Structure formats: structure tokens, C-alpha cells
Length: 171
Figure (cartoon, rainbow, N blue to C red):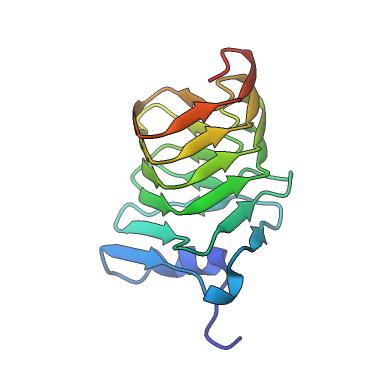
């Protein structure tokens, strides 16, 4: 409808709005729905603003549809993902999320993502800072670090990391 944006457009708009803190929320009509990507990751490259993407109580799923990773968080970006399910990501590394910035994941599920090499659920790169709270990382696969592969700094609290399948070093 009028006034609605795609998530990709909203991320782009948030990076040029000029306010230091931006929050993207979703229309209630999307409750219990799945947003499928069009074959390319949602890239967040914004060192000037912090961005929160909040699914609220909508039980919202973001899917890579087996064709790309879901999020790429670039160096210098500060992002918080709240109340979302990230699934269906596929990539060599970081199938669910590839993070080089500062990323907080809160009350979310990272599940069912597949990396051919490392970081089926999350790849936290050198210089990346990752905080996971009240979330579940499960059912991801990758040769190394199926749930999470970490080369940066990670803090995990009140979360479950289980049932990830890795050839070498599950997790």
C-alpha cells in the first residue's frame, strides 16, 4: 500500500536520514509471514547511524530462500536485530549473517542456514563485535563453525546454541 517500503529500501533510507538512531518496524499485516530476499543479501554499510530492525510481536521470518545470505553488516555499522527469525540463508561463509561491524541479536532465532565453508548461522569477522541475548542459534550447517564462527569479539547470554551440524567444529 501507499507509504510502505521494502526492507531493502527502508535500510537504504535509514542510512541517509541523518538521525543517529533509526528503527525499522513492520506493518502488522505481515504477522506470521516470511519476507523472502530476491537473491542478494541485505547489506548495512552505515558508520554514521545505528540501526535497529525490530520484528516486534509479529513472528516475522526473513528468508534467503537458499540463494544468498540474509544480512551483511559492514565495518563501522552498528545494528540491532530484534524479534526476528533469520533462515534459509546460503553462502560460502556467513549464510545467515556476516558481521564486520557491531551487531546485537536480541530475542531472535538464527536457524536453517547453510554455509559451504564457515559460519552457517553467523560469521563474526575480525574487528566484528557480536552480542547475542535471549536468542536461539540452531539447525545451521557449515564445514567450520556451523552455528557461529568467531574471529572477533562475542558475548552470549540467556541463549541456546544447539543442533548445528559442522564437519569440523560444530557449535
